[in-house]
Image (cartoon, rainbow over all chains, first blue to last red; front, side, top):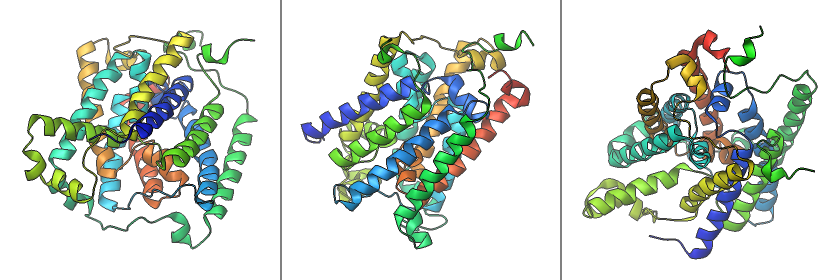
Length: 194
Length: 182
């Protein structure tokens, strides 16, 4: 039932750093998540985009040196598409994603705490309905652990380089434009002056 | 110079780079990508087993997971989730950026002050989100960050479909007018 203590300790340490970063990144806040989904506040995309670009460089370097292996989730079209749509709709309603809802609990937010209880119930429903759900998951086929480099027949490093270049271009473009004021916790006040 | 730990906000690029480097650490030390939701599945499965021990032999979930050597457990990822709570708690204690809000102001501006309404909707939203995450086998962390950085086809598809559904739902909830309150 328990993994060995060293793995438990490593998980806890990694999680503490993760939660610390999410809270400092202000994504454990309802108005920042909804601000992103209403296309007003691009904090979430900036954080996720930077994490993906920086992460891919190091992870593929580790893979090339046999320090780790890739963990690719299978392309089960039904499960991924139906799951993604339910996920997106639920996230917009809750106002936190799974990681940030746990971080929002750490920040004290009561609606996130209730949301986490709902998440446990949602996970329980999935476990209970596991068998009948398999036909939905595999509805449009199981395409296995497919990766984009395999699909395009190129080296992953070509995609890493493309990602880094695209990331730098976007940051340069975004940051060279005039800065918008930070959103306020209390809505409405900023617009009172017209 | 002020202590960065006591600041309420860091640059999103700095935070993103930190999460990227943290994923190197996770891959290098635990051979595991950052992900949140399978810990919830494990917790729910362990709770079910605790309530009804016979499920382990009779329910297809437990039987199939046991065959794959993936019986529900308290592991690296479970501790990661616990750590996220502790890390956010520490960060908010250092900076004083804490709240016991039940109804976020943006929500209040659109749906009113009712606490029960907000909490019921948050519960349902959380349930639907997690059910979707387990159908797709990942979330904003497992697919959105860890999967896309490995160029998994499933993860890039998940991110596009998930953001499209989330943006559409947010605009259904708030409308173009409500969006101006952000």
